[in-house]
Image (cartoon, rainbow, N blue to C red; front, side, top):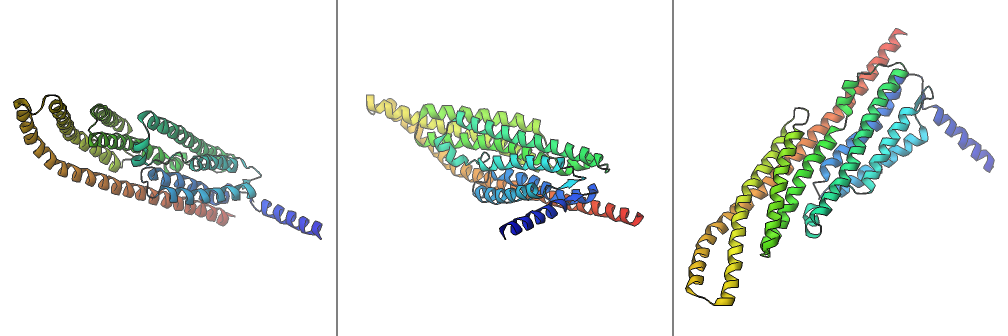
Length: 348
């Protein structure tokens, strides 16, 4: 009885396997494209989540579960055209790279928490690791599209590779990663600077002020190199505005640092010399300078909060538009392949 069950299972599996072997490339691509599109969409969807800490974990786990399911289905059924499985194997390899990236949490950044425990070297190392894996995923995807082109040509379908790359090349992933790295470093240094000012630590304040200034100027240069995303300048403008506003905030930061330094100086002076005429004159000047700076601080904090909220809102919209286009183009390809198959059938 056991042998009969085992034989039945093997026959069923063989039938299932053979059912995935196509004679024409068009229906094969129509079937396989849904896996490819989801993998591309998964990386793009997660690329924005590295900045949005409140949703990244749920997004990652959901996408990871579906990617593993797709890898399993592709591995079990091993779609082929004329018994050629090379493109299916290439797609599995690409999905494997994404799964490794997701499982390791390489793209998980919580800037507010990291700034409390990590230093700048650790921050740079994290982005170095992120960029290594991100570049690897990008390269694998481009190689996959090239494989799709050669595979299709081999089996009798001339693909418009420019169209394919426009739809599938995962530029969005790297584009988002690069400008989010700029924003994350700015936020990281700013949080450390605010902490140093809260504790009136003179050396730390100067260090973080200079580091923030370096990140802002570096970010400005990098954004000019990065440019816009497929003629969509939404995030290019937003990130540039983010940097410009923080450069403006630096004037306020400098005023606060000078104020705190003066306070520390007066505390040290009175401890050594008492409240002399010099101290009283300096304390009076300090209080006069202190009031307008503290009053302006409320406005600065409000502007900064609005800037961050608006940036996140624009980032969400940017991602939404891209993912909608990705899905729409996936549907276009499906319809395109279907119409070609219909024409072919009519000719027969």
